Image (cartoon, rainbow, N blue to C red; front, side):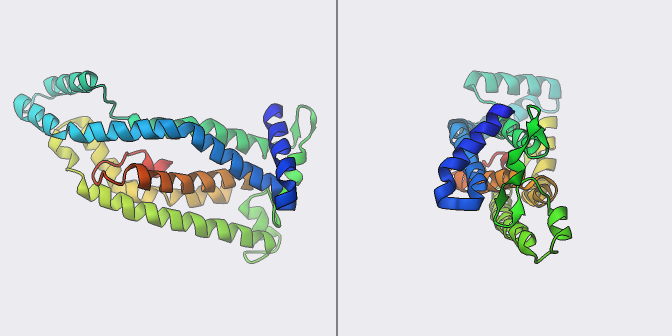
Length: 250
């Protein structure tokens, strides 16, 4: 973790002439963008996988019709079809999972008072008036909702709400456009149908995350969520019924 702390400090030093006291916050945003760039090839691969999955729907319907109510045979045939076409039903989950270590690294970095036996100097950095190691509760206790630090959080909440609203509308459209999961007749399809009902609301859970984690980790979440919304709008623009189930979690 000390290596990562030095990296953030070094990037902040490079950005200091442009962002002054908020240089460390800018470094976190830049770090998040770099992580998303590294994961982007996997996101593109996931989009291709979703296209392939969408193309298999007619064949899946044929398998259901062929095997009738014999779930065991249907599941076996479905697995063979996915293996034959080299398609994974969970292909959209990998990019989100690979970002989790970066989030937890930031969370622990800005939750620790010491790093390598020395004082954690990163905790002294701020985003305008809000300390990067502080939380929303700290901001409320130091100036209230409309205090200097509270206004920083209100701005973040506004961004998250806008992104979540965009995701809500888009996800609602994709779940309506997609064929009913029950047509596949499998337990997996039934599970996906249940997820589809709550998918449009899942982006709003980011508001809770931003409120309870250190501001540095919240910046990562907000930046990543905004990137994800734009990225999905581009990668899935021609796929009205094939948005990945992991989309709302990113």
